[in-house]
Length: 136
Image (cartoon, rainbow, N blue to C red; front, side):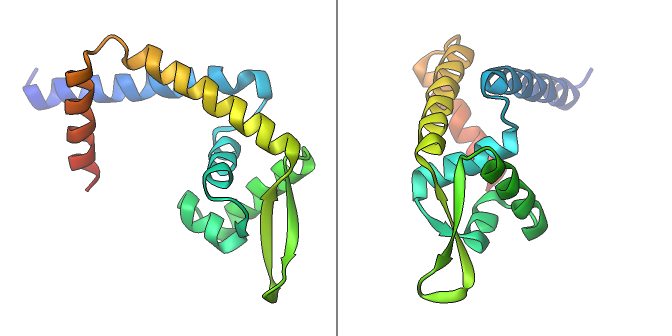
């Protein structure tokens, strides 16, 4: 097996393992990864227009609407009319959404530390740089 083939196999194995761990981490809240990402964006950036959330999530507007509908049905976010533009809709976390979003972030942080904890700090920094280069 060539180095590139081995690298590809290893990369995808790690990606699958991380996805599985992430789903397991979210299980106590019965939250999808898409819902979790939206909660995280709103925790970090606060109330925003639906179109801004779409940009942050890098998904289609229709998909954002589905995510927001699901979160609103669970009482985690609320829609508000934008006072500056009545045609625009704002999305904001509810108190319950802030609590669950924060708990998910804490759980994800702990899971990430456990997963990458087998690497030295220097190796983690090196891996972060390499992955950043691949994403550039």
